[in-house]
Length: 233
Image: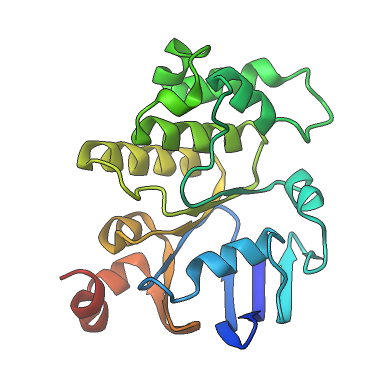
């Protein structure tokens, strides 16, 4: 479904991503793990065309999207939930969800999508007219994922969904990510909580200073001595 080949990303003279290659097959959960500064967020932002690559190609569903505009990428079903949630403050939960469906040309099936969102996130239904900025961090993360679901994703790019959350919210968020995947949505996950990320991953890649240094199934990397030493304590 998603094929990244020799991806390079530079910030001026700084090489953030140095020829990274990986793939995401339909229906998988793929995790990218690595320390801060490894290039994980740069990869997602480049896939979404929020920043431009310096080299390499990005293919989605067999189509080269390397030079495509962000809104066209969203229309094709590649949806990014950014680090830090980025919900729209001063707008209600309902308005945030409506914006998730902004690029959809057919609005007649929105009720089914609202029902699906509220099944995963019942708290949001109870607070539809609440200012999104007044929710807790965990609730805002739920809204960010729910807003992405309103865009009818084929693949979700999730950047640090557990960042700053209490342990109970982290468990809940990961359970919901697994449920969404079980319903047919492919997931590309960046996560500092390597144990949680590898537990739900079909396959995973370990990044260090802009390079892929290890890859394997989630179960294999959980047992890897190098991964245990560097990321699992």
